[in-house]
Image 1: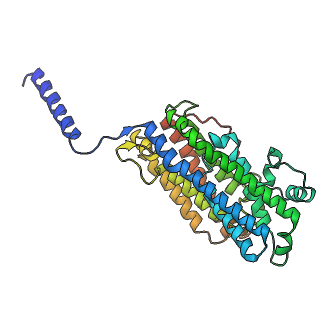
Image 2: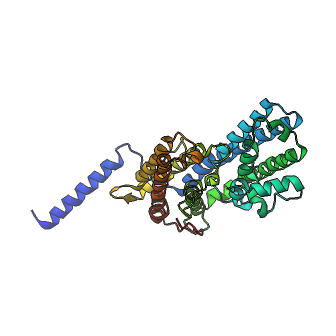
Image 3: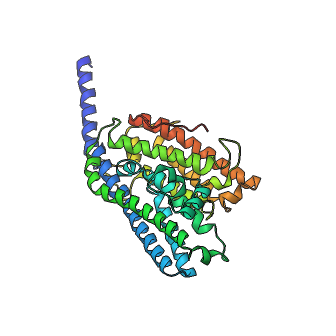
Length: 363
């Protein structure tokens, strides 16, 4: 067969196969960064802050009832509203850019461990400003965790009918509500700016979102697990967990890990014809780790962390007193550390995004 004729037949065959693939009925997936940003803004971020806003209002209402009349039922309602709000926060903490950055929301709401000495001083003197950074460790969720749970049934009524304590609690609740209200309301206008910045540069929305996500994950790994069990300083610090007084540290971390997993797979109503979530984005980029899709490896690591966490029946603060239970937390930390490499190195490299936050994580 003449050489030119052979080449023609090969090209014709290739063209025919290409046409056949295009007409197979499978929609072609395209990388559409705007679709991704719209999906995350409308179906993850804004709903998360809306839920946080609703639960903040509920806490405020329950506290007003408690302040008007102390009853054990009203007190328990405040505790429940606070627990619901803090659980909701776990689905917002990774979105520390835009309006949340304006009010340094993560620090304002959840700087821990809390400073119990400063809290007592603030209550006694009545001279403080919760708007200043010097009081980050004396307010927010950690301060409420201490005040609402570091009490016994014998002294409970006396404490929560004390005018100074009620004033401080009211200021804490109002400060939390003010910051959440601001972020929730600002997202209504910030949304258009967010979905319009579709590049990969440092100022793009994708870069801001990915940087804050990775940063928040590192904070969770270090502050919620590593530091309290002595990874950094070798000293075990039981009251440095996120919620040591309510003994809810592990439960809170569970919500946090689930929120990270959701961030990768995207909202439930993803558009299957477009790359509108991180999982599909990484898959379309053919990002791999050890011959497996990087997105699948990341999800597997998150699932492993969640599985390890679910095997712990004792609260973190109590677990570190038992060698066998402390070993389980150490295994969880190691697994979370493995995810840092996947997120901070492999994922951002595949997406062409630079990590631009300062990392002081020495563990």
